[in-house]
Length: 130
Image (cartoon, rainbow, N blue to C red):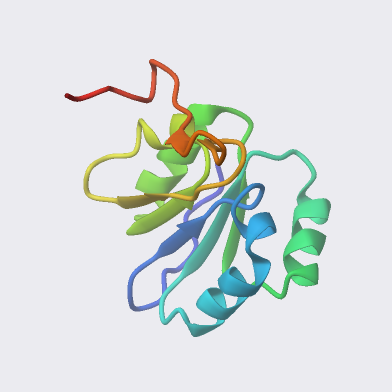
């Protein structure tokens, strides 16, 4: 993993690309352009140039782009880069993130059944409470 780039003053925002930015590009464009701190895009992809192009098409402002090739790698990057808030649509990507990072689960058709009005979680990522 390359050395951690300089962090801007303010909170660091981490965002997943596929299923998050791609599902609400106007929202994330506005948010990233108004974010006062560092914006890190952390995505499970292998083609960096395609990721750069996809961010440009959606008018996303970012400071760092990190591509990972395994689930645990996102949590490692988040810890190494001191990400304060992280948004992803896959609960599997959130389970190893330490408690000092706030996480947001972005709802989409891959993790929420809009007909049944229920979240879709695996036994690995969900726990029913009664």
